[in-house]
Image (cartoon, rainbow, N blue to C red; front, top):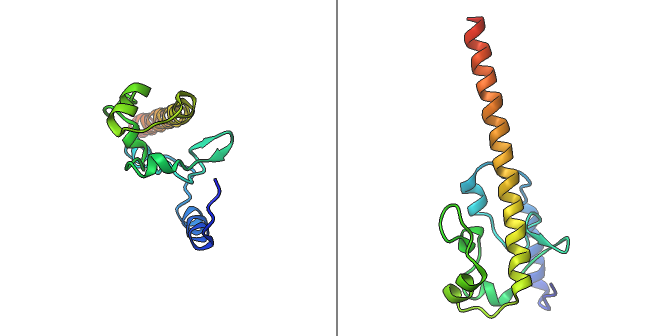
Length: 126
């Protein structure tokens, strides 16, 4: 992404550094994750910004969701937001979101398993 306004570029850079978080702790956290200039949401190994999407109010992962568990299809996305975009571009973003969701679910399973182990171990020793 290239932004010609130096002030805007600097603000985005600072905001990205301040709001950086490489750990998604819950589904709610994932859904509220910003799409733009986020190091976790990348395509082609680069953070993204699609002005046409942003101008239609698409800012967070939750805007790509049909409901709590399902992402919008390409057709649903275009119809809901009246966005002209490329199928491959949309699916590049969706693929990354799916990957992040899988990582989050796996981390939560590990945490629950560890918590159960600690709880069982504590009760056994009591």
